[in-house]
Amino acid sequence: MVFTTSDIDKVLSYKTWNTKKKVDELLRMDCSMYCNLGSDSSKSDKGEVRVSSRKIYLGIKSIDESTGTLFLQTMDSNKNKT
Image (cartoon, rainbow, N blue to C red; front, side, top):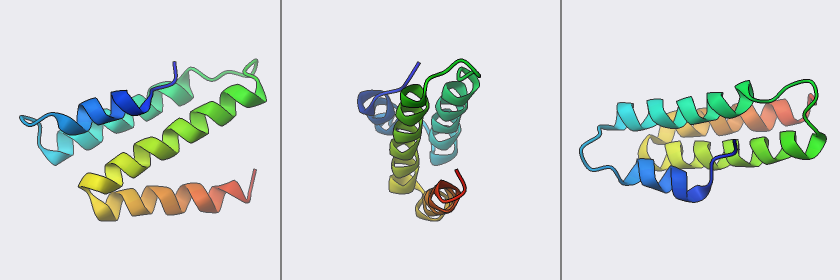
């Protein structure tokens, strides 16, 4: 299952959740996507997960600048290795 921008926005809009809980939920969503990829997943499936993962990290950056930046930098540095 690939999470959409509306799923990410929904988590970010929760007023009763603190920043840590929002980040935890966004990372749970990210983890869930990668755990559902298998050896039989197509290249396009893996690409969709990567794009969605980047959107999640951008969402994290909007509420926790340093953590989101770190995730994005790590993703960009790993792009060259694949």
